[in-house]
Image (cartoon, rainbow, N blue to C red; front, side, top):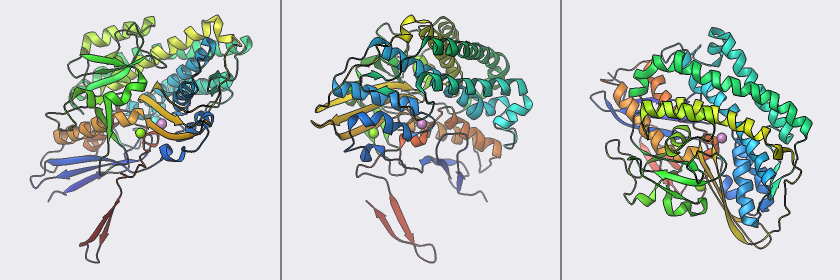
Length: 482
Ligand code: MG
Ligand code: NI
């Protein structure tokens, strides 16, 4: 007799806490699935009443993996609240930190989290299907990975004094100039990371991806739109530009970040602390139905690669052209997120070098003074996990009266749920499943590299809490909801 419910708990090698519930019908085939996010952070509410200038320092505590991106989106929202036009060198220092953080993050995800499924194989025993397994079977690769993560931390320590929970992006600019001596020290490390990035993508393209093309073509397949950030010339940017919202057919609209509420709306699901945004401007409503999804778009690496017209750095541009020739635009295959992640890594490493070679990076003109006022300000960056929007309103003393965050992972909530459902429906038949099949379902989630602690801030009265009270024989006595 087949079990009626399969639970994957916890989902492993992601940031944060989630479980997957798979419900089987009487025929043993998949009836429904849910990816439940079972943690809550709640920053939107308790930031109310704080002085706006504290926000860039407070929000770094949202997540130990993504502090830089919250730090920068917050500083940009504060610039907007205070009406500050920041000096060019201040912006470049912020961008430099962002690109360093990106290189570390993309290496972390590819090699420590998702990569084990590809390097060791989805069917490898879970005891070795992890970074330790990678290090043991490929010691040279392991050494390079650990070395580059170490260099990322060191570079951030030098440029900003602190790699985690940074404090140097301030409303009005950046608080610490980079000396020529420091720049010279950092540039050597950056060169090593750039060489690693180029090696990583060519290694993955020859040794890894060709082995798993079958999985790429079958696991987590859904058809959606995409969101990312582009400059006026259509090139991908991680720090600034217009937000581009692309439909599944490849047509798109570009908009300024402070207009985001005209384009997307957030819904609450009764079974998750994670909201679901959808593309309101398409006018078709919201549905996660696999056959006729409505309003669904994705963010993160594959989305950025799809929405941009080009890359502004030479090696990343070459990689983009090759990727597009193979998979089209927009590319829809979910596991291609991992390939796109390595293109993003190459771009960030190249851009990091460009910034370090720019003489302006050691300028001391990096900050302008700001004054509190009553205003609303929106700031956004591309975080590794997707478009990250901070939206603050202040009173005349510059105190926060309202804060809304839309986090990269949040945009991907509906797509992750759909990919899980697709994977489970395809792989589990007649009640039969194996450890490898359940791991393959998890691979569909891992492709999105979710960061769940970053993404759960819903405390606005529609909190999806449900308490079920059971009697001694397991019968439902009462259900309490708020
Ligand atoms: Mg929000
Ligand atoms: Ni995070």
